Length: 298
View 1 (spheres, helix red, strand yellow):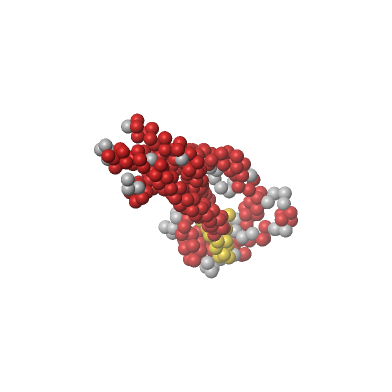
View 2: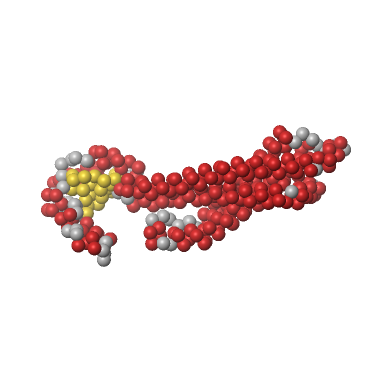
């Protein structure tokens, strides 16, 4: 067994430049894959965060908004009762015109827009929390145009652009990862072929003295696995550095700090890192095995 490991590391030393290129390419492709996995995890958390906060807003018409401070009018009471009875709805809260204006003042405190808005500009609203946030459009369809209703807005639509952007980033990252993975596969295949060619005499002698084909191929598979695992470790290290020196500063900005959930070190080391190591080892092993079966006949 020690002979097999010695041969594997000897092969890596013989083709040092090719081995380094293979490790770097594998690290880049796995790093992009890891970035894509982090993007997916962040998108899922962001969706969960926003879906827990957003609601369907049923804005009431002007007469109801002007006269009803506690949803005691027939129009408001009727709408609220119907909404609360719906299996689609988890809860309903009433926000009067005065409450809406007070909230507006808190949000835009110190900004010039406050000089342009009066309480009469804002309607009273029934804020509907959905049992399933993805079905908010059904409430919009059912209550749009109803007597006493000014308009109905599903807040989920306001964050659709954010999710679309994050999804584009994820898809682009995975696309680059696929291209880099193909390059890594070709490098692994070429390196194994070159390594087998430089040791063809040794392998031939081993076969003549009774060594099985599998036994002669194991050192080449070990070379592939070692480079795949080392590439995965480097990729994980690159993601850690990217988080510490880039993402943490970016996510701490005023705009993103309260918009997107932060990426923790456990996400990189506890979630993405092990996945990259397994993927790197499996891809390298599979590529090495197929290469040896198809191209190496000695």
